[in-house]
Length: 280
Image 1: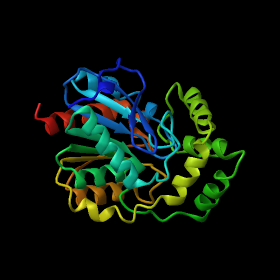
Image 2: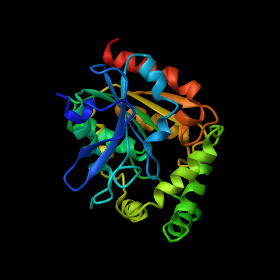
Image 3: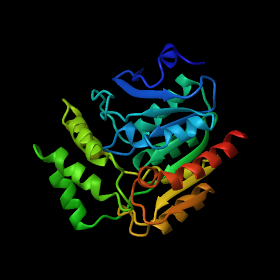
């Protein structure tokens, strides 16, 4: 059953109370249509799916884009920000809006979506996992140093958004300069950089991988062939797909955000996959 917030105007920011704070989200598409929930990665906001929502709505889906705890318009008052906390938020949002839902997740949120699918298979109809982490990845000394420096203030938000920009390998969207400025401004809002620091300190995907064995839902793994977060992007995509018994879309030349870099490649595949998930 949908709550009162679900009846708010389309595109308006809505809030889901999670006890310690609220999760921000917005909804587009017809009421009662099959639900797709889009969740961004660490240090990003729900607008990263700005090039994907329209194609899903045009295909007849209801699309909710959500901000992670401590990010965007969500509250910073939580004490947990890691995968399992995010999974609980996704479950609660699907319950609130009326599921089951296709979870369309990027990066860190992919791990949370796997946990959600294992814990509540009745609420998760399918998974689209973009640049998916379901296990910890070895990192270089340079990356570790960059992360430590990024956590220092006052230059932390600027350092993170510069690193964020480097993860786009195919092409940057036409509005990327504005998006990057808005992302940096968001991270500088009261409490958000502290929440980001807390998330980095809590984040590990080591406990997520065993949940993959419990997932029975259809899964599409989307990976950029040049994603710098993985030593072997294609190999990691195949590993995730094998563990989840899913299929792979390898996006040639793309980095960590193929759905924003090359939406003309990703959108048709996701729409077609959604049709198989919901039996359209």
